[in-house]
Image (cartoon, rainbow, N blue to C red; front, side, top):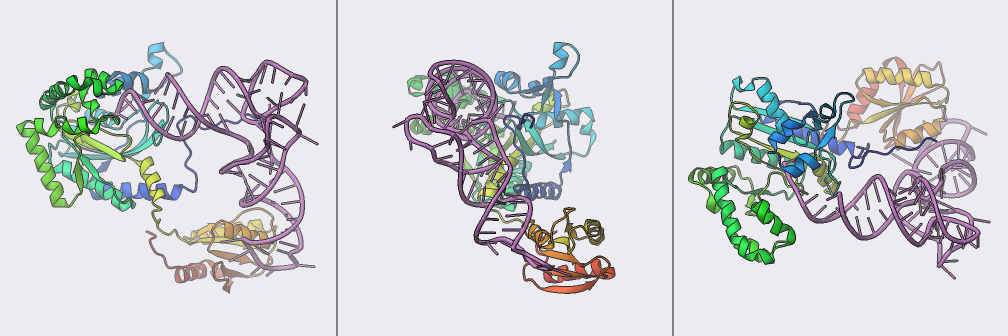
Length: 416
RNA sequence: GUGGCCUUAGCUCAACCGGCAGAGCAUCGGAUUGUGGAUCCGAAGGUUACGGGUUCGACCCCCGUAGGCCACCCCA
């Protein structure tokens, strides 16, 4: 046997056992996207590195270390390394928005996307190199009404997928002006306490004081006494945030204020999002306010499986078997006719005894078996594999009769 | 990128102190001579992740590599 090749590090295969849960979640994504008036957009899985670099503000680690670079086969070293697999959806969407002059479309523009994202980092619990995200974006609406709408949408998504106990965490770090004031206040607060901070946080204090707050090792006492971002919001930002809270209350969305929430998408959470009012301008478009969120589908599916979310019943499976093992061509012929009638049908070309064929049908999850007799017989038997009941049917009206029996005996619950 | 633990059949795991690599489940076949998931019998399935070293002899000890899990860095 040739040497085995395994899946690339940090990726995983979607196996048949998990597929129904995925399909369920994907169905909710499509349904909600459409019900909330979003239009689908798909952008390339790879883009120029520069697009992501500009979108992320060149923050060194993310761009230089964790970007999944792809190389073209030809060209100079530079040309070969100017592409990267997308680490997040927003940059590509904004690029497409600008490229296709979408600012002339009726505003606000509502877009959604579902697809794989990539980060070249060492894999860890629920953090893969390839992961799937559902993303929605609203461009041209300053909020806060739309902010509340999107949070309510995320809330509904988890409810419809069947996840219980999902709570929204909320915070505002304001615009660039109030954020700068807040950052100063944090530095002032933590600087004298530096000795009580972890080594990492002491470094963060220099680089990005906000990040000190989400240090898991941060002394709870220090955290509780730290200045809160909400107290440093300017008038406009405070009004925005208060407006959002009021609307969430009116919509009945449960949320918690989390003063330590200081970044966009926490990978340990199920999803996250926020406003990016300046991004479009940075990427060369006409300035427009924008907001979006991305929800991690992998983690949602894992959660749904843990909570054993019930899946909608599938349409019953019919297996076509025959008395003579070598009758495969006729099994296929009958199976095709049944499929013409809209049934979900399975058969195989193996030469196995009737006993083995039925065993295989049962193991494959078939609810019904159509049993063909000796070649030449114009009749067939329909067997209910649950009850063992059988009925004799004429071959020329078989499809119609099976449809009738299946509809009659198997309540079609949940199948849409 | 850094650190800890781990890697034996498709899956879950055994194998004494270094002495011929095994079981359960799953798969395939037979018992059941036109009727299924049970039972019984049997078969197949392994370069013990990969590469090196120590040893008369290595799944076992040592080194390296890859992969997995967990944590750190980072988190778009």
